[in-house]
Image (tube, rainbow, N blue to C red):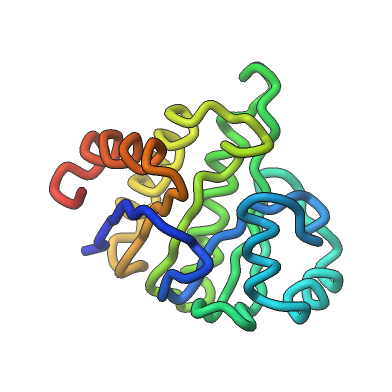
Length: 175
């Protein structure tokens, strides 16, 4: 059974097989989580990302973790919030689903997610967290033995409390 956790902290220090980067389409670094992950991983991450040719919104690509405790970084590109009438919910769900799929394809047993698209891309937090949790629940139900541990990590206490509240709705026995 997959263990679901909500944690408060810095995703660049989490000891899991893979962390997910809330990336932009270039995969060449940016601000917020993206910048922190690139900074902590070191210049080799940027060099590998340059070979990937970018990534479309809703998709994900995987690299090594380099200077991070995580062996891998899964770069997921979430949508910019444009009012909710441009497929943002589906694209965000795809970013989470494609990240989980890549994890399983690479034998990853533990993965940590930030709140994709909720920073500079301004996706409403509660909606984004619900999409993250429901997509993960659906994936685990279809692939019950695929992952041992999924962590939703928040940098702020406000976001962490929201994740805890919502997690109890989707995973009542885990959170």
